[in-house]
Amino acid sequence: MLSIIDYDAGNTFNVIKAFKYLGIEVQLTDNPEKIMKSSGLILPGVGAFGPAMETLEKKNLIGVIKEAVLVNKIPLLGICLGMQMLFEKSSEYGNHKGLGLIPGKISAIPEKSGLKVPQMGWNENHLKKDETDFEFIANEYTYFVHSYYAVCDKQYLISTVDYGVEIPAMVQNKNVFGTQFHPEKSGKVGLNILKTFSEKVVKQ
Amino acid sequence: MLAKRIIPCLDVDNGRVKKGINFVNLVDVGDPATIAAEYEKQGADELVFLDITATNQERRTMKEVVERVSSQVFMPLTVGGGIKSVEDMQELLRAGADKISLNSAAVATPELITAGAKKFGNQCIVVAIDVKRNVEKDYYEVYTHGGKTATGIDALGWAQKVVRLGAGELLVTSMDKDGTKSGFDIELYQKLSALVDVPIIASGGAGISTDFTDVFQESTVDGALAASVFHYGEITIPDLKKILKNQGVNVR
Image: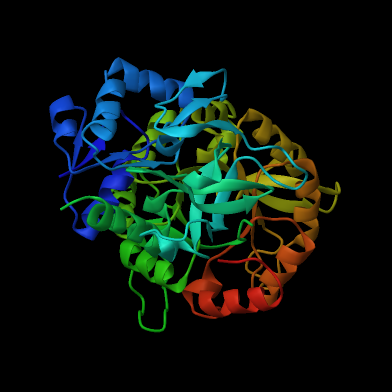
């Protein structure tokens, strides 16, 4: 079964609703055993990087998530802040270590004239990977709310959006996936991301 | 780049959408979830639910409305009306709202903006400002309580203040334009955009599709909100977006 990692992330319930709507069974859990036995993992997230990593640490989930992904090869999808936490570090309000499952770091969106931070709204995805189950994201708009973004090598990009800088929208490193946007708030395309992750990426 | 947002606004009274809604295939249904789903199908970018319920008892049903809508409709939802505390905000956010809109409560208790922004992030806190030009004293005046109470507060200064306090977005209704169907108050939005750097949603005055084109081309607002023109099908969102696209406005 798919597990949504329970660490009080703000968007957890909306993510659960989206899976329910799709008829995909999910469990909300912080139980290491259940996490290790999952077919796939979802790491939601809203808010600031530091406190979220602290919560994961307090719940002793960092090692569990890493082992599940690296040793048991369980596919994981990080959403918004959950995606940012997959990277090595972040400079949001001080320096914080991330899960380190995708090489790269999280930096502030550069302030340029005319661009408001946070980026809040629907932006158009540019496909950056030739062969991917998520090819359908090309030229589709998805919903973003964020002030920080991932800086990483282009080999990890599935799609990007333009917001003064090229912002990684969907990323992948082997069995680790992440979306900067909120699939649970991105209409049909967003639901399709969740569906594709659970049906094609996750082994049934 | 970021698309300009088209936002239908729904008045909810005791759990039902109050004004009659007249979609092509959907006549006068009062169920918020059904109407929200129809707007999602049409391509709305966001929905604003305004709770116009009079009593606290009935207000509890708003939570259920948000819960139900967010189980079926997967787009950003802003909820406003009668929110008076961080606990109220939390309840609605837990139920599935993405943003909380404060209007009269922000004027009465400006600290509420900061408290909400600190707890949930600036992006969660929308301050709705109802503005009417005070001709006698020559300034834009803030009104509260559904446009019934003049406050004597200068709207431009108030906008800057609420952003400093933590508002992540402004929903600005021109009462001079509201209901006139004569177009958005572009001058007001130009003035506001020069003063604040958070997203601004224009509201009040939409009558025909080109009103939207005008406000997007002549000001830097991020979204435009309307109620009756969408509810009664005078403007349909797919048509509107086609027109906007043809005019070079970036829409989804």
